[in-house]
Image (tube, rainbow, N blue to C red):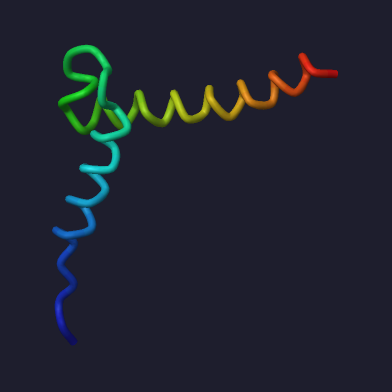
Length: 58
C-alpha cells in the first residue's frame, strides 16, 4: 500500500487560512497557528452577526 503524503493538502489549507487572515495585524496575518485561531473566531462571529441582523429586521 502506498504512503499518503499530505504536503499538497496542508499547503492548500495554510494558503486558504492566510488569505482569509489578510489585513490582520502582525503575526495574525503571517503565522498559520495564530491566523487560524483568528479566522475561526472571525467566521464564528460573522455567523452570529448574520443571525443578529435578522433579529434587527423583525
